[in-house]
Each structure stands twice: as C-alpha cells, then as structure tokens.
Length: 137
Ligand SMILES: Cc1cc2nc3c(=O)[nH]c(=O)nc-3n(C[C@H](O)[C@H](O)[C@H](O)COP(=O)(O)O)c2cc1C
Image (cartoon, rainbow, N blue to C red; front, top):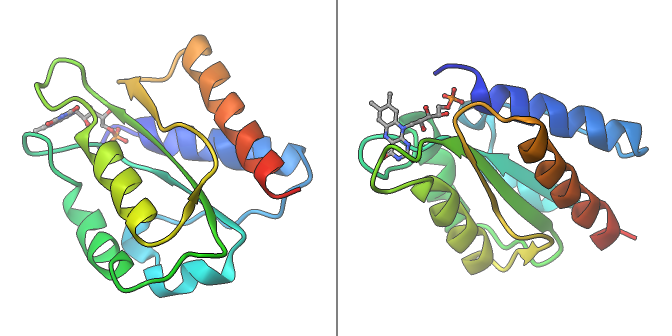
C-alpha cells in the first residue's frame, strides 16, 4: 500500500546478495506456493489489513501453502504493519504458523516492524537474514 514492505523486501534481497546468496524477489500475488520446495529458503514480507487479516493479494498464496511440503525449505517472516491497530502484525503470525505447519524449518524469529522500518528495525532484519544464511551452511 505505502511501500513499507517493498522497502524491507528490497533491503533483504540486497543484503542476501551482498552475502553471496542467489535471490529471487517476487510479489506474493505473483508467487506460486507450489514452487517453494524448489528453493533452499523463503523469506515472506507481509503487511496486515482488515482488523488483523492477511493482505487480500496474499490469500491465494497462503491457501496453497496448506498443500505444500516444505521439509527441505528454511523460512523466515517479517512484516511492517501498525501498532495503532489491535491485531498488530497478525499476518506475520499467520504466515509463521502456516509455514511451520507446512513442515518448513524456521530459521529465525519473526520480525514485526511498526510502519516504516528505521535503522534499528533494519538491524533486526539483517540479523534475521544472517540466521537464514547460517541455516543454509
Ligand atoms: C485499512 C487499513 C487496515 C489496517 N489494518 C491493520 C491491522 O489490522 N493490523 C496491523 O498491524 N496493521 C494494520 N494496518 C497497517 C498496515 O499494515 C501498515 O500501514 C503497513 O506498514 C502497510 O504496509 P505496505 O506499505 O507494505 O503496504 C492497516 C492499514 C490500513 C490502511
């Protein structure tokens, strides 16, 4: 909506590339959940909408995840949302639960960011990415 998660996703992609990882960056609405087992790791960045719901454009991806076996895939979840809402960052929690239910191996604690990521948030995000890299070694 306002580019907060796009900024985070671009930052993570750049950080991973700088650390010699091969990265595919896609919008959730264009991502086929059935392709995820082909990747060593997936990082989902999501906002939260409609009183603690997933973004509309993430729903097909989320539903398809229920049929996917991620036993060989590491994952991490991050999301910019807003502390001014009761269900702060609930979509991050939903994705974390679903990726675990799909047998994914959680490489790092999920990271919630209040609105636009600041310097401290990017430090937490880099740390999350470090754990993802470490999980692949
Ligand atoms: C109509 C509306 C509903 C929202 N509902 C929630 C919510 O329930 N929980 C939450 O944590 N944030 C909520 N947000 C905040 C957004 O998730 C937040 O602004 C986020 O940074 C937007 O990310 P984006 O710029 O990547 O789209 C809502 C925002 C709007 C405009």
